[in-house]
Length: 259
Ligand SMILES: [Zn+2]
Image 1: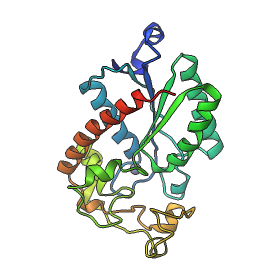
Image 2: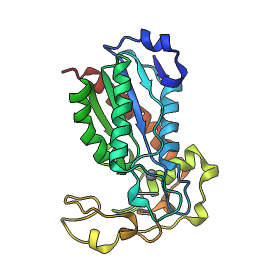
Image 3: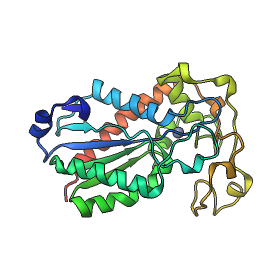
């Protein structure tokens, strides 16, 4: 079974075989995405992906349950631009801890923190170990910004340069042009690389390997980091098709991992 938590009854949730079930807690953001994309971009993309999995896929290794999406995350890097909503670090930690604890209290053993916003990633990696220790859950972090997930999907599609895919970029704009084109304003799209000091050296860049605690207005004027003018709906369709298939393969591996 693949289902959304909110569509199941109490008794249906109670009856799920918890040994083989996996709960996904979708985490996204509401934050500025340049002039051309809506502030809900990260949650709109994640919702579209979840809907495709729920409506089109089957899974024979157990139940996949998608908990209600947390559409506000940790986005304080974008404060200063209008439209951004954020939790503070301590609030977001407490909120995730409470929701995961509730999922554990319903008897589930396996949890995937299912994330579409790069500003959440450090928190999810941090809390995953605490949730393992505090609730005995097996916890996985699915993140698509600091893994090879999208790089693999973009292999034959990406046309922009080294910094073309980062924020409100070729990738996110293509996904939005396919998922919700009426909310995309391509005539306002501008391309912008991060500032030279976090770009033109081998050590401290926005991609690492060494990290700087930047805020968005330190490194971009437009609020875009990347090249949205290369985006097309056709690329978005191919990227969604890739993402659904790749995700089902990754989920099969999550299902097999038991300590
Ligand atoms: Zn985004």
